[in-house]
Length: 104
Image (tube, rainbow, N blue to C red; front, side, top):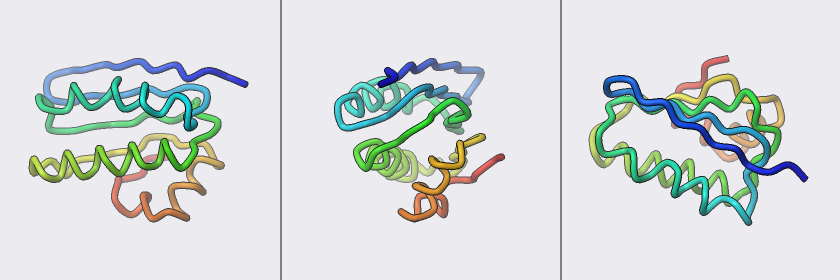
């Protein structure tokens, strides 16, 4: 099993979160803790999921929580960049793909 590796890059008011490996029930709290504290000072949020090979329902819930948090603060520029095919399918099935802008 692969671990979750998270990197963040903030330039001006844009936060990009790079997730690599797997987001599952065990590490989804870590994923949330690595993202949520940084949301207050950004106008745009980008999740780069090019190297994410799996996301569980717990990881999808984090994406929904982040969406709710950002839209409550009137931030609507939310992007998921380069999701792998299996991750994109999970985003589509759950409707999350309709909430975020998907960039391939």
